Image 1 (cartoon, one colour):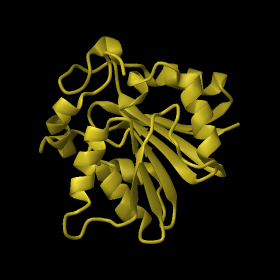
Image 2 (tube, one colour):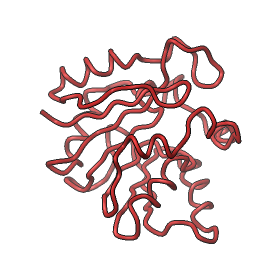
Image 3 (cartoon, rainbow, N blue to C red):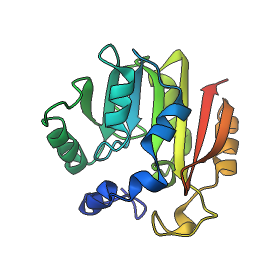
Image 4 (cartoon, rainbow, N blue to C red):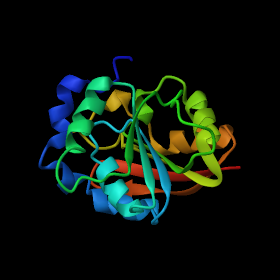
Length: 194
């Protein structure tokens, strides 16, 4: 945990009714090219803003591993899973981006939404992603653009540009397949191991 970590005390911000207007989940899900039956590791799942729609997108034959190191976030997501018609293909996992506690080779997609700027050791995150990804798997990094004003989001000086993320990926043996803006304030990068 560092000064960039999103606090459980601010979890209500993740439920802001305006959020789908500036970061539409369906736009992100479409960009991720999620298919029925996939296994997805949602690292930094928070209260499930993306976890729930991803679970619906992968269907009953798919699986979503909702990983968060803050038990308070997992508790909030767990309450949503008790609601009627909640997806039943989500597992709550206590772990971090550098140590997910997931088994090796278990995911078709590793997804980090608004987490990259919070992490201290990006190389270690990429090493962990490579460990849990299947051979043909991809990694997706969604984070805040530094060239747009806030709120919402973290302070501008905490944000990391898509260009810098792409350079970090390349330096660590990943190939960027696609990079572009999503929503009003974010970018999305899709990459595979080289």
